[in-house]
Amino acid sequence: MLRFLALSLLSLPTLAFASSEIAPPAAAGGGIGAPEIVATVIFAIAVLHTFSTKFFAHLAHINPRHAGLWHLLAEVEVVFGFWAFVLIASLFLLSGQNAAVHYLEGRNFTEPMFVFVIMVMAASRPILVAVAALIQQAAAMIPMNRALSTYFLCMAVVPMLGSFITEPAAMTLAALMLRDRFFQQGLSTRLKYATIGVLFVNVSIGGTLTHFAAPPVLMVAAKWQWDTLFMISHFGWKSAVAVFANAAVLTWMFRQELSGKGALGGKSGSVVPVAVTSVHVIFLVGVVLFAHHAVVFMGLFLFFLGYTEAYKRHQERLILREGLMVAFFLAGLVVLGGLQQWWLQAALTGVEPTVLYFLATALTAVTDNAALTYLASLVDGVSMEFKYAIVAGAVTGGGLTVIANAPNPAGVAILKGYFDDESISFVGLFLAAFPPTCMAIFAFQAL
Image (cartoon, rainbow, N blue to C red; front, side, top):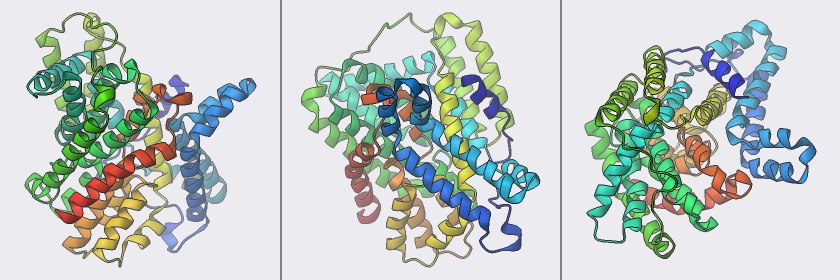
């Protein structure tokens, strides 16, 4: 399975993300054709499948004869890739081989590849040790229980780092630190769901301090001429208020359960030399700087793999499998999402800004928020109120479901093993993310 995913990912076309054009095979003649209808039906089934992974995981336990198949269908990262294959097969039958291949080659897979690379690099031992040391030093300066201050910083500061090292990297770092320091020591189901709910929301809104780190912002920043100063003044400070409020409330609510935890689980291993950590940071910065140029960051990644092999004694297992699974999920979303423009764009136009904000928040739960803002960027002559509403709504709803924000599958891949049946319930995640989402709504609408 891993080999298949690797070959599939490396064979994807590396087109420029900003110049990607969503153009369905039947769109040339105008109107809505059979491919669009079929694609929307398949997309709806895929969304329902995503919400039903816990059911398939349960089937694997009660039906061991076909446990392998049920486990495969229970992997949330496999869902969209599986249904993307069904879509391409359907297009092959409906429109012919040339149209199906042309559509697939017209998709932009730079973001899935980037998320794969940044996940693996950010989760490398030298990076994790360096970030954990910084968090511990900062936690020691806060006059409260060390476990509580560590948890608070993981939930507040690390998600805000997503504005600089990109949201997928921030999600990976936060999830791994939470896993090693809290989840491995045993948490109640209620706290585990509350943690991922707040984490997903905070990462989604925490990337809005800059114009280059959050995928939904990146989709519109160039066309609408938004820079970092604009993002901080219109979005960033409001996001920071919501992020720290969410983290503070959650830490206080579960202070008794958290107070005895927070120590690093497992073996600490040897100290990582500063030179090795510095090289890892240089690789990470290089990938972030060239996030939209797959040829460059994939080349850097290959050099990174060689370096980790040369200094293996300072490394632990790279999360290649987890990264490939997440990339496979996002690649499937790219394929399925390309034919949803006909109804998404119609839903976004001609709507009053406040209503549009809540509509965008709701739509984000069932579509990738970057795809949502990209489609909004195709609409010409829109007001500033429209732009603010669509982007604020897209980041607000980014924690409600696994598919709402590109980094969410990375967090799921790292933490799902600590939930019942190794699966995260859609209902559980939605309910856990709803209160911090309401805090984000307050920040973007009232402040």
